[in-house]
Image 1 (spheres, rainbow, N blue to C red):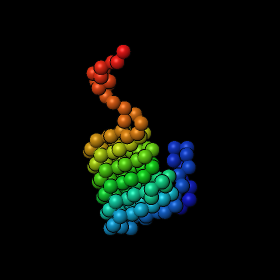
Image 2 (tube, rainbow, N blue to C red):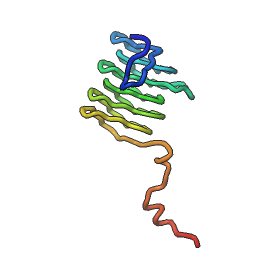
Image 3 (cartoon, one colour):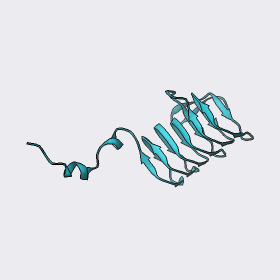
Image 4 (cartoon, rainbow, N blue to C red):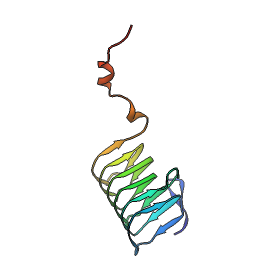
Length: 138
């Protein structure tokens, strides 16, 4: 269970595991890799500046906001997701909340009750109508 797990050809490093029988009531701060098979009732937030990966297993459940560089969801999540880099929603993912992402991968079968909101450099660009409406200076 601990150690390296293969995930789509890349290595997933697991520094901490929350087992299937564990229920945590309260906020969780982490760095590195966190693998959740149990239940968390509270925010799950990566430390500032940490390149952290949160993996929510198929039987795992989180009730609360999630913030990390990479978020991989196979279980159920009730709350908003904020990922600095990437969000992966597996076929068994069930998300009730908005997903803020830079890159998203959503497999057939994944369920999202919320909005997909792109963040990053492209999201900061003005809308095409605003650019066209701006007067040109000669």
